[in-house]
Amino acid sequence: MMTWTTHELTVVDHTDELEIAPRRDDGTLRSPVPVWVVRDGDDLYVRSWRGRAGSWYRAAQASHEGHIRCGSVDKNVTFVEIADTELNDRVDTAYRTKYSRYNATYTDPMVAARDTTLKLVPR
Image 1 (tube, rainbow, N blue to C red):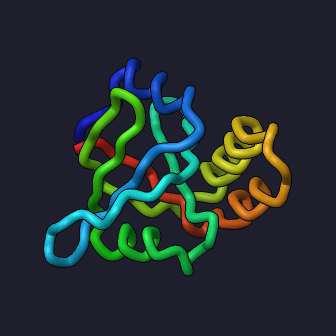
Image 2 (tube, one colour):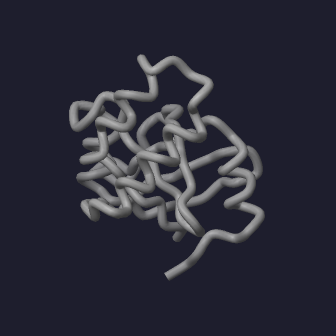
């Protein structure tokens, strides 16, 4: 299994959004959409602000593959669904901390969407 480099983690950690494009059933990529991303240790996580209804999330959940882009980071990824409560608690904290300057109108739905947590694993 591949891991993120220190440079990649730093770039993503210091940006607000990354572009995410899940793979369709036919193997093509969907149009990229911006999503918030957080770091926990050497791992990166995203959630769907619209919860399970988010179209990019449904596509990611179906294919488990896609592509992300953020500054100099341009990677194919595997999406791994996360249900671990302790890990989700840390991801909640990471969202609250990283995006604390934003109104709760935006951050509260991200914390509430913990059942959509996806780990981004580089391929």
